Image (cartoon, rainbow, N blue to C red; front, side):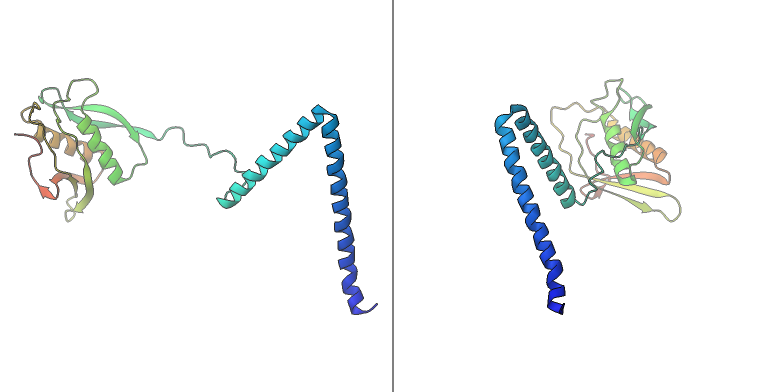
Amino acid sequence: MNLIGKIKMPYNKFKVFIKNRIEFLRKYIKETKIRMENDVRERNRIILLALSFLFVFDYIMFSYHIDKNIFDIFPSIPVLDLKKTINVYIASEGCKEIIPEKRKINSDLRDENLIQRLFNLVAEGSYYENTSENVPVKFLIKKIWMVDEDGEGKTCVIDLNPVILDKNIVVVKGSEQMFRDALQKTISENIPGIKKVILLEKGVPFKKLWDI
């Protein structure tokens, strides 16, 4: 047998195999159509199998496109408790004193996100007393950063958007300074290394936020 014959032999075998498979498939489809026409249960079974195959195929294609293992069906089990209990300091009703209250926060917050969360908790006030007038404004934090004070600890700087105070709002005397003190106490206690907190209003320090 020459070289061309040796090359054609496996090709011809493969060609015959494909032809037989196609004939078998055509025969199977024809028999299936006959069963579906003659038996309602068989028709319903085949439709259900076809739909199931289609859904599985779609799932495989979707997993392929997002580069995910097709067997990774269920999400990983999250840690059951990611929260810790901390002290938050706030001005009491009438701004008579600074009082501590317990709060639960996520334990995996980074410093900047933790500072923002602590700021909001102090601004929200007490869960048990009517302290809504102690902080008569809504804050929007623009930026948070920390400055190292040459080995004497860090200063946390919080830049706020300008605060607009409603003319009809009632301002509790001394509430702003007490808010600043409570915020510094809360942040310094819950983030080691921070010794001082400075509030800026659009980059300007020591501006009155709401006391008039």
